[in-house]
Image (cartoon, rainbow, N blue to C red; front, side, top):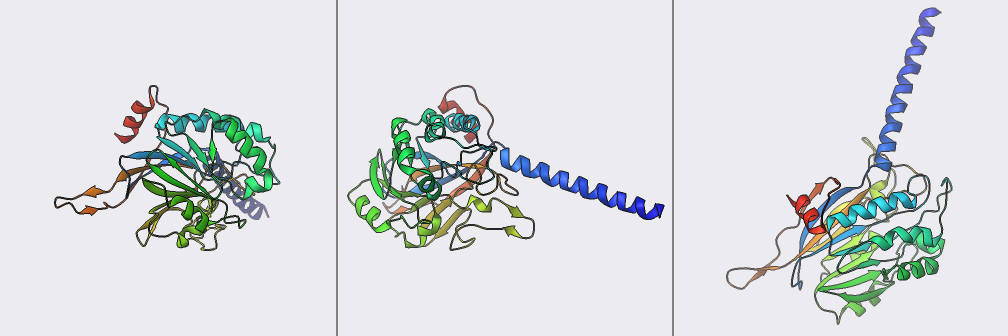
Amino acid sequence: MTALLRRWRWIAAFLFVALAMLATKAWHDTLAEPRVRRLTIAVPGLPRPVTAAVLADIHVAGPDMPPSRLERIVAQVNALGPDIVLIAGDLVSEKRVATHGFTASEIVVPLAALDAPLGTVAVPCNHDHWFDWPALERELHQAGIRTLQNEATQIGPLALGGVDDAFTRRDDLPLVLQRMAPLRGGRLILTHSPDIFPQVPGTVPLVLAGHTHCGQIRLPLVGALATMSQYGARFACGVTRESGRTIVTGAGLGTSLLPVRFGTRPEIWLVTMVPRRTGRFGLSYTPPARTREAQFFPIVGSPLRARRKFLS
């Protein structure tokens, strides 16, 4: 009897240690500083390089994404020195297990500190619509952040289209393409769900999206438990290239449904768009896109110095 009890004690101790290790990893994956993932891609029609910091799925709510944490992330973004900041929706989270909810003003206030020469642009998403998109939009405009809801605009050398949320069937890609037609420069689309990508024509070489959280919970040997995309894992995470077009689907920053990540990290995408090169005989060609990752370390100094630090 004593030997059996000792055996069960060892099993219980092993299970306790295993659960503690899993909980520690989940805590780290959920609250870790966002990793910086980089992409360099040639965009036809672009006269000069433009670097965009892409944020998605911020999901401001307790316990994992209070405004104070978003303030630190904004400082991280500013240290990268982007030319423009693009937000692919989901500013808010309404998960039932949230320990604290925030008002539209509290959600947006940290974003007002984003600092980029070409400004900040956001598109709405499913959680934003379910929460109160008109209120969020008013706060964004007061903070100097432009919003695009099935609209297009000229921002410096960029012809930027913003497609509303496909998950709630508010998207109108044909209308956005129509509004992009008279614009000049490098063409790209900012949207929340990646599910519009198969319908995007070859005239738009780059799409930036979020929504999937890269699964949020990814188990060893199993992978993502869910992607919330009708295409499954096809466009669920990272860089996907099809028929001369590229989509970047970010893992996002916050959480949805459950305030926990496992096997995925919060991330910021730094996408550098460069002009298509001209060869020796006047022929244009597009060099292959290059991706790499960089960890964030606080850097004292100007955004330019910060950018050089990350590129070194």
